[in-house]
Length: 378
Ligand SMILES: [Zn+2]
Image (tube, rainbow, N blue to C red):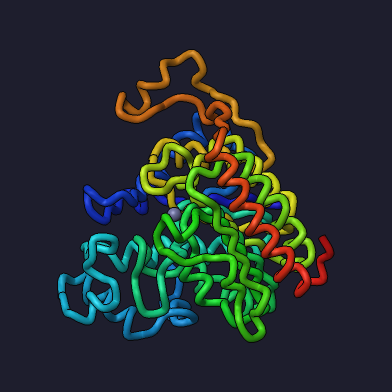
């Protein structure tokens, strides 16, 4: 029996960077409630696992010892200028009293999920607390303290696995790109809002990798305003041929939900319809999948999209077990407790033309410059 695993612990949902900080681990608790409400977490082949704490030595597969020391000191309330240089104690990455504890516990779910795929009979594992794609070797960035993705993929490669990384978070995965820029052991694909309008300002299509990694780093930047149709056009034109040709053992999917049109930080215009379609394509392309939560700053939307992703990866249909009960009672009036899906939304007119032209330009670039490296004819 193939296992589908959710790496989840209530304790992790209780951490908070700062009350005013947009990144909320509590999103995972909302998702967990939705998984129950929609009857998606009671199958015989499903497991809910509170991840055991990973061995700290594993962090050094990617991070420097000096940086980990800084995280530990920062957590104890010490402060130095060195920390600021390492991106710690900033507005995005504040010092908080469970900072290192939280970061390593959240990363442990990613590592445990990967090991379940590698060692055990698991086909799919999801860590909603993972996906810190901005963290660097020796610095925190963009709400990310430890790069669970770089650490885990490095270990999978050491174990001889071929790994494709697909990042559909609205932000460019700069930390992961930097980690594997010179190697052909990882196929790194990131779709994101263009760096012209969004942090971290990188991820242009011309960043294609160097040395052995030339042609193994694929950026698909999209124009602000891009809707489901244009996003899917870009995704379907490029991602399936690349993954089919690379033939990974494992696909690591960073499934952030800040591409949604209701997200307060990014400017893409996706709905649940586009998101679900992308997830189902990833599912069809992947022998084994490690999915990671990543971004998403509209809390209910993020929980709803993760729920839909979980259902798709597990091959289930959501059924509202509370149908007929007033939904708003569950979450209070401040959060939309409506349906998981939202209605179709299509951008029109000049904005649509501009988004489409932008996507076409990027698609052509990738087909001209990256497909030949993989022997793909388009
Ligand atoms: Zn993001």
